[in-house]
Length: 91
Image (tube, rainbow, N blue to C red; front, side, top):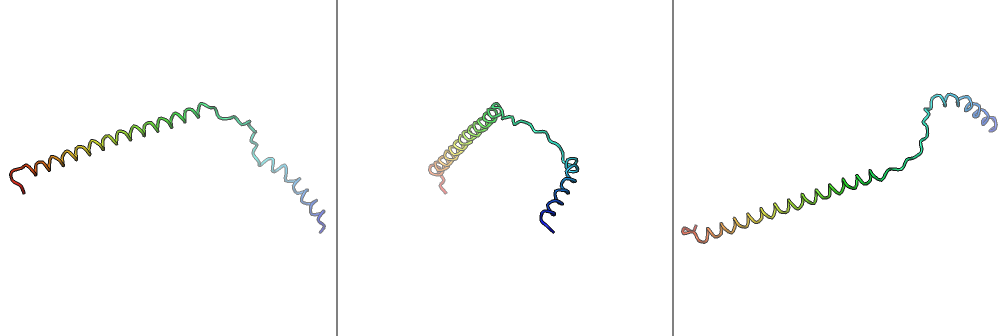
């Protein structure tokens, strides 16, 4: 077969299938792209800043609790040593 005849058959077949393709393909209207407004970005930034602040406050509180517990442990250890050193019945 000639290449030009093959091309002609293909074009004819595409021409016949074009109306079917239009019926089966859904039509989506194009919409102009709307850029994001700056207010959602500010809200996201404020939420992030709030989370970061909350994390910082939680860290400070945990460090303070750990320091108090460490001080209580040291005080208890010193008291136990003093009791052992100055008690009358040394074991």
